[in-house]
Amino acid sequence: MKEFKSFMKGVNFGGYLSQCEAYTKEHYDSFITEEDFARVVEMGFDHIRLPIDYEVIMDEDLNFSESGFSYIDFTIENCKKNGLNMVLDLHRTPGFSFDPFHNEKGLFDSKELQDHFYDIWDELAKRYAKYSDMLAFELLNEVTDPRYMDTWNNMAERCVAMIRRYSEDIKILIGGYNNNSVEAVEAITPPFDDNIVYNFHFYEPLVFTHQGAPWIATMDTEFRCPFEMTYADYERYSSKYLNQAYSDFTKYDMNCKIDEKYFEDLIRSAVDVANKRNVALYCGEYGVIDRADKAEAEKWFKLFDATMDKYKIGHAVWSYRRMDFGLVD
Image (spheres, helix red, strand yellow):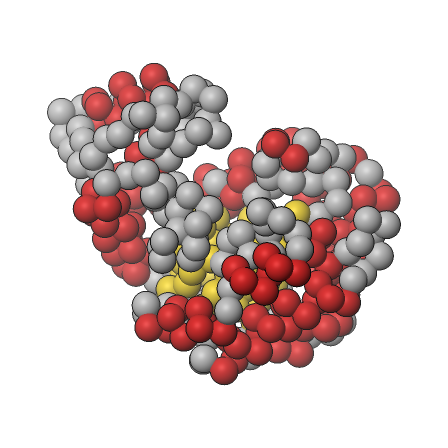
Protein backbone atom coordinates (compact mmCIF):
# COMPACT_ATOMS: atom_id res chain seq x y z
CA MET A 1 0.00 0.00 0.00
CA LYS A 2 1.29 3.44 -0.90
CA GLU A 3 1.52 6.26 1.62
CA PHE A 4 -0.22 9.60 1.07
CA LYS A 5 2.88 11.52 2.11
CA SER A 6 2.50 14.95 3.72
CA PHE A 7 -1.24 14.38 4.13
CA MET A 8 -1.07 12.34 7.33
CA LYS A 9 -2.74 14.61 9.91
CA GLY A 10 -5.23 17.16 8.66
CA VAL A 11 -8.26 19.20 9.62
CA ASN A 12 -11.36 20.12 7.62
CA PHE A 13 -12.42 23.71 7.05
CA GLY A 14 -16.06 22.65 6.98
CA GLY A 15 -18.62 25.43 6.98
CA TYR A 16 -16.27 27.90 5.29
CA LEU A 17 -16.97 27.39 1.57
CA SER A 18 -19.39 24.49 2.03
CA GLN A 19 -22.53 23.96 4.12
CA CYS A 20 -22.33 27.67 4.78
CA GLU A 21 -24.56 29.51 7.21
CA ALA A 22 -24.82 32.06 4.40
CA TYR A 23 -23.18 32.19 0.98
CA THR A 24 -22.08 35.79 1.43
CA LYS A 25 -18.88 37.82 1.43
CA GLU A 26 -19.44 38.63 5.10
CA HIS A 27 -19.43 34.95 5.96
CA TYR A 28 -16.38 34.06 3.86
CA ASP A 29 -14.33 36.98 5.19
CA SER A 30 -15.01 36.19 8.85
CA PHE A 31 -15.26 32.39 9.10
CA ILE A 32 -11.58 31.74 8.29
CA THR A 33 -8.83 34.36 8.59
CA GLU A 34 -5.05 34.34 8.15
CA GLU A 35 -4.58 33.67 11.88
CA ASP A 36 -6.41 30.35 11.59
CA PHE A 37 -3.71 28.86 9.36
CA ALA A 38 -1.00 29.55 11.94
CA ARG A 39 -3.24 28.02 14.58
CA VAL A 40 -3.67 24.88 12.47
CA VAL A 41 0.12 24.51 12.36
CA GLU A 42 0.37 25.03 16.12
CA MET A 43 -2.19 22.26 16.62
CA GLY A 44 0.13 19.84 14.81
CA PHE A 45 -1.65 19.40 11.49
CA ASP A 46 0.16 19.08 8.16
CA HIS A 47 -2.75 19.80 5.80
CA ILE A 48 -6.22 21.28 5.39
CA ARG A 49 -9.14 19.66 3.61
CA LEU A 50 -11.18 22.43 1.99
CA PRO A 51 -14.75 21.42 1.07
CA ILE A 52 -16.41 23.73 -1.49
CA ASP A 53 -19.98 23.94 -2.76
CA TYR A 54 -20.72 24.87 -6.34
CA GLU A 55 -22.72 27.89 -5.13
CA VAL A 56 -19.46 29.52 -4.05
CA ILE A 57 -17.91 29.47 -7.52
CA MET A 58 -21.07 29.67 -9.67
CA ASP A 59 -23.92 32.12 -9.94
CA GLU A 60 -27.61 31.24 -10.18
CA ASP A 61 -27.25 30.60 -13.90
CA LEU A 62 -24.34 28.21 -13.24
CA ASN A 63 -21.78 30.56 -14.74
CA PHE A 64 -18.46 30.80 -12.96
CA SER A 65 -18.05 33.61 -10.44
CA GLU A 66 -14.55 35.01 -10.10
CA SER A 67 -15.14 36.28 -6.57
CA GLY A 68 -15.77 32.74 -5.36
CA PHE A 69 -12.46 31.47 -6.68
CA SER A 70 -10.67 34.21 -4.71
CA TYR A 71 -11.41 32.34 -1.48
CA ILE A 72 -9.83 29.16 -2.83
CA ASP A 73 -6.87 31.33 -3.87
CA PHE A 74 -6.74 32.77 -0.35
CA THR A 75 -6.68 29.31 1.22
CA ILE A 76 -3.96 28.00 -1.09
CA GLU A 77 -1.85 31.13 -0.53
CA ASN A 78 -2.07 30.85 3.25
CA CYS A 79 -1.43 27.12 3.21
CA LYS A 80 1.75 27.78 1.25
CA LYS A 81 2.80 30.57 3.64
CA ASN A 82 2.41 28.22 6.60
CA GLY A 83 3.90 25.07 5.06
CA LEU A 84 0.54 23.28 4.88
CA ASN A 85 -0.74 21.00 2.15
CA MET A 86 -4.35 21.05 1.02
CA VAL A 87 -7.11 18.80 -0.32
CA LEU A 88 -9.62 20.62 -2.52
CA ASP A 89 -12.90 18.73 -2.11
CA LEU A 90 -15.98 19.31 -4.29
CA HIS A 91 -18.62 18.85 -1.62
CA ARG A 92 -21.68 19.65 -3.72
CA THR A 93 -22.22 19.87 -7.47
CA PRO A 94 -25.41 20.76 -9.40
CA GLY A 95 -27.85 17.90 -9.00
CA PHE A 96 -26.07 16.23 -6.12
CA SER A 97 -25.74 16.59 -2.38
CA PHE A 98 -24.79 13.98 0.19
CA ASP A 99 -27.34 15.60 2.52
CA PRO A 100 -31.00 14.70 1.83
CA PHE A 101 -31.94 18.03 3.40
CA HIS A 102 -30.94 19.75 0.13
CA ASN A 103 -33.18 17.42 -1.90
CA GLU A 104 -30.71 17.64 -4.77
CA LYS A 105 -30.88 14.61 -7.05
CA GLY A 106 -30.36 13.70 -10.65
CA LEU A 107 -26.60 13.90 -11.19
CA PHE A 108 -26.16 10.23 -11.99
CA ASP A 109 -29.10 10.16 -14.41
CA SER A 110 -28.55 13.45 -16.24
CA LYS A 111 -25.96 14.17 -18.92
CA GLU A 112 -26.57 17.90 -18.48
CA LEU A 113 -25.79 17.78 -14.75
CA GLN A 114 -22.77 15.56 -15.35
CA ASP A 115 -21.49 18.10 -17.88
CA HIS A 116 -21.66 20.77 -15.16
CA PHE A 117 -19.60 18.48 -12.94
CA TYR A 118 -16.96 18.05 -15.66
CA ASP A 119 -16.97 21.81 -16.36
CA ILE A 120 -16.31 22.53 -12.69
CA TRP A 121 -13.34 20.18 -12.58
CA ASP A 122 -11.98 21.46 -15.87
CA GLU A 123 -12.00 24.96 -14.41
CA LEU A 124 -10.54 23.89 -11.07
CA ALA A 125 -7.80 21.89 -12.78
CA LYS A 126 -7.01 24.74 -15.18
CA ARG A 127 -6.50 27.09 -12.22
CA TYR A 128 -4.98 24.86 -9.55
CA ALA A 129 -3.36 21.71 -10.97
CA LYS A 130 -0.09 23.66 -11.13
CA TYR A 131 0.09 23.43 -7.32
CA SER A 132 0.57 19.66 -7.37
CA ASP A 133 3.49 19.93 -4.94
CA MET A 134 1.06 20.83 -2.10
CA LEU A 135 -2.46 20.29 -3.44
CA ALA A 136 -4.68 17.25 -4.06
CA PHE A 137 -8.10 17.07 -5.72
CA GLU A 138 -11.09 15.18 -4.28
CA LEU A 139 -13.63 14.61 -7.03
CA LEU A 140 -16.85 14.44 -5.00
CA ASN A 141 -17.91 14.14 -1.39
CA GLU A 142 -19.87 11.10 -0.23
CA VAL A 143 -21.69 9.36 -3.06
CA THR A 144 -24.80 7.99 -1.41
CA ASP A 145 -26.66 5.12 -3.07
CA PRO A 146 -24.72 1.95 -4.05
CA ARG A 147 -26.73 1.73 -7.28
CA TYR A 148 -24.87 4.81 -8.53
CA MET A 149 -21.45 3.21 -8.18
CA ASP A 150 -20.95 2.01 -11.75
CA THR A 151 -21.97 5.39 -13.12
CA TRP A 152 -19.77 7.13 -10.58
CA ASN A 153 -16.74 5.00 -11.50
CA ASN A 154 -17.25 5.91 -15.17
CA MET A 155 -17.59 9.59 -14.29
CA ALA A 156 -14.46 9.46 -12.15
CA GLU A 157 -12.47 7.86 -14.99
CA ARG A 158 -13.50 10.59 -17.42
CA CYS A 159 -12.80 13.31 -14.87
CA VAL A 160 -9.34 11.96 -14.04
CA ALA A 161 -8.44 11.85 -17.73
CA MET A 162 -9.54 15.47 -18.07
CA ILE A 163 -7.50 16.61 -15.06
CA ARG A 164 -4.44 14.79 -16.40
CA ARG A 165 -4.38 17.23 -19.33
CA TYR A 166 -3.29 19.83 -16.78
CA SER A 167 -1.17 17.71 -14.43
CA GLU A 168 0.18 14.17 -14.62
CA ASP A 169 1.17 13.99 -10.97
CA ILE A 170 -1.46 15.80 -8.88
CA LYS A 171 -3.05 13.36 -6.44
CA ILE A 172 -6.75 12.66 -7.10
CA LEU A 173 -8.99 11.25 -4.35
CA ILE A 174 -11.95 8.99 -5.13
CA GLY A 175 -14.48 7.67 -2.60
CA GLY A 176 -17.28 5.13 -2.69
CA TYR A 177 -20.98 4.77 -1.89
CA ASN A 178 -22.85 5.05 1.42
CA ASN A 179 -21.20 8.41 2.10
CA ASN A 180 -17.62 7.23 1.53
CA SER A 181 -18.10 4.24 3.79
CA VAL A 182 -15.03 2.16 4.48
CA GLU A 183 -16.66 -1.01 3.13
CA ALA A 184 -17.26 0.75 -0.21
CA VAL A 185 -13.54 1.13 -0.93
CA GLU A 186 -13.58 -2.26 -2.66
CA ALA A 187 -16.21 -0.98 -5.12
CA ILE A 188 -14.00 1.89 -6.32
CA THR A 189 -12.61 1.17 -9.75
CA PRO A 190 -8.94 0.02 -9.91
CA PRO A 191 -6.61 3.05 -9.97
CA PHE A 192 -6.26 4.73 -13.35
CA ASP A 193 -2.65 5.72 -12.68
CA ASP A 194 -0.05 5.97 -9.92
CA ASN A 195 -1.48 9.16 -8.40
CA ILE A 196 -4.92 7.96 -7.34
CA VAL A 197 -5.86 7.87 -3.64
CA TYR A 198 -8.81 5.91 -2.22
CA ASN A 199 -10.89 7.94 0.22
CA PHE A 200 -13.22 6.91 3.04
CA HIS A 201 -14.91 8.56 6.04
CA PHE A 202 -15.19 7.14 9.54
CA TYR A 203 -17.64 7.97 12.33
CA GLU A 204 -18.05 4.59 14.00
CA PRO A 205 -19.56 3.66 16.38
CA LEU A 206 -22.11 6.16 15.09
CA VAL A 207 -24.21 6.05 18.24
CA PHE A 208 -21.17 7.42 20.13
CA THR A 209 -19.82 9.94 17.59
CA HIS A 210 -23.32 11.25 16.82
CA GLN A 211 -24.90 11.01 20.27
CA GLY A 212 -27.71 13.52 20.61
CA ALA A 213 -27.46 14.55 16.92
CA PRO A 214 -30.72 16.32 16.03
CA TRP A 215 -30.46 15.49 12.30
CA ILE A 216 -30.86 11.76 13.01
CA ALA A 217 -34.61 11.28 13.14
CA THR A 218 -34.56 8.39 15.63
CA MET A 219 -31.95 9.93 17.95
CA ASP A 220 -32.91 11.29 21.37
CA THR A 221 -31.20 14.70 21.52
CA GLU A 222 -30.67 14.21 25.26
CA PHE A 223 -28.91 10.85 24.82
CA ARG A 224 -25.32 10.72 26.07
CA CYS A 225 -22.96 7.77 26.49
CA PRO A 226 -19.29 7.05 27.32
CA PHE A 227 -16.93 5.59 24.74
CA GLU A 228 -15.72 2.52 26.62
CA MET A 229 -19.04 0.68 26.74
CA THR A 230 -19.52 -3.04 26.24
CA TYR A 231 -20.49 -4.32 22.81
CA ALA A 232 -23.83 -5.28 24.35
CA ASP A 233 -24.43 -1.64 25.29
CA TYR A 234 -23.46 -0.50 21.81
CA GLU A 235 -25.82 -3.00 20.24
CA ARG A 236 -28.67 -1.95 22.54
CA TYR A 237 -28.23 1.81 22.06
CA SER A 238 -27.66 1.53 18.32
CA SER A 239 -30.85 -0.47 17.90
CA LYS A 240 -32.73 2.14 19.88
CA TYR A 241 -31.36 5.40 18.50
CA LEU A 242 -30.22 4.71 14.93
CA ASN A 243 -32.55 4.14 12.01
CA GLN A 244 -30.31 1.46 10.49
CA ALA A 245 -27.57 -0.93 11.58
CA TYR A 246 -24.23 0.74 10.92
CA SER A 247 -22.12 -1.87 12.73
CA ASP A 248 -22.48 -5.50 13.71
CA PHE A 249 -21.53 -5.64 17.37
CA THR A 250 -22.90 -9.15 17.88
CA LYS A 251 -19.81 -10.82 16.40
CA TYR A 252 -17.78 -9.71 19.43
CA ASP A 253 -17.90 -10.91 23.03
CA MET A 254 -20.86 -8.83 24.13
CA ASN A 255 -19.51 -8.57 27.67
CA CYS A 256 -16.20 -7.03 26.54
CA LYS A 257 -15.61 -3.32 26.12
CA ILE A 258 -14.88 -1.81 22.75
CA ASP A 259 -11.18 -1.63 21.88
CA GLU A 260 -8.73 -1.21 18.99
CA LYS A 261 -9.85 -4.53 17.44
CA TYR A 262 -13.16 -2.92 16.52
CA PHE A 263 -11.48 -0.14 14.51
CA GLU A 264 -9.02 -2.54 12.88
CA ASP A 265 -11.78 -4.94 11.87
CA LEU A 266 -13.74 -2.14 10.19
CA ILE A 267 -10.84 -0.85 8.09
CA ARG A 268 -9.32 -4.26 7.29
CA SER A 269 -11.16 -4.71 3.98
CA ALA A 270 -10.05 -1.27 2.79
CA VAL A 271 -6.46 -1.94 3.81
CA ASP A 272 -6.53 -5.28 1.98
CA VAL A 273 -7.84 -3.62 -1.20
CA ALA A 274 -5.26 -0.85 -0.98
CA ASN A 275 -2.47 -3.39 -0.52
CA LYS A 276 -3.70 -5.51 -3.40
CA ARG A 277 -4.01 -2.54 -5.77
CA ASN A 278 -0.98 -0.67 -4.38
CA VAL A 279 -2.93 2.53 -3.81
CA ALA A 280 -2.81 5.03 -0.93
CA LEU A 281 -5.67 5.27 1.59
CA TYR A 282 -7.01 8.48 3.10
CA CYS A 283 -9.72 9.14 5.67
CA GLY A 284 -11.12 12.52 4.67
CA GLU A 285 -13.48 12.88 7.65
CA TYR A 286 -13.71 11.53 11.17
CA GLY A 287 -14.74 13.06 14.47
CA VAL A 288 -16.98 13.19 17.52
CA ILE A 289 -19.95 15.50 18.01
CA ASP A 290 -19.38 18.41 20.39
CA ARG A 291 -22.23 17.18 22.63
CA ALA A 292 -20.09 14.25 23.81
CA ASP A 293 -18.10 14.48 27.02
CA LYS A 294 -14.66 15.85 26.08
CA ALA A 295 -12.72 13.24 28.05
CA GLU A 296 -14.72 10.45 26.40
CA ALA A 297 -14.20 12.00 22.97
CA GLU A 298 -10.45 12.10 23.63
CA LYS A 299 -10.45 8.34 24.23
CA TRP A 300 -12.10 7.79 20.85
CA PHE A 301 -9.66 10.12 19.08
CA LYS A 302 -6.59 8.48 20.62
CA LEU A 303 -7.71 5.00 19.60
CA PHE A 304 -8.69 6.07 16.08
CA ASP A 305 -5.52 8.09 15.48
CA ALA A 306 -3.39 5.19 16.70
CA THR A 307 -5.15 2.88 14.22
CA MET A 308 -4.60 5.30 11.32
CA ASP A 309 -0.95 5.76 12.27
CA LYS A 310 -0.41 2.01 12.56
CA TYR A 311 -1.50 1.51 8.94
CA LYS A 312 -0.02 4.83 7.74
CA ILE A 313 -3.37 6.14 6.57
CA GLY A 314 -3.63 9.91 6.16
CA HIS A 315 -6.62 11.48 7.88
CA ALA A 316 -8.41 14.83 8.36
CA VAL A 317 -10.62 15.51 11.36
CA TRP A 318 -14.08 17.04 10.99
CA SER A 319 -14.00 19.95 11.69
CA TYR A 320 -11.97 23.03 12.59
CA ARG A 321 -14.81 25.37 13.60
CA ARG A 322 -18.48 24.92 14.47
CA MET A 323 -20.42 22.39 12.32
CA ASP A 324 -21.37 20.50 15.55
CA PHE A 325 -17.85 19.01 15.59
CA GLY A 326 -15.64 22.10 15.94
CA LEU A 327 -12.23 21.72 17.58
CA VAL A 328 -11.60 25.37 18.40
CA ASP A 329 -15.04 26.39 19.69
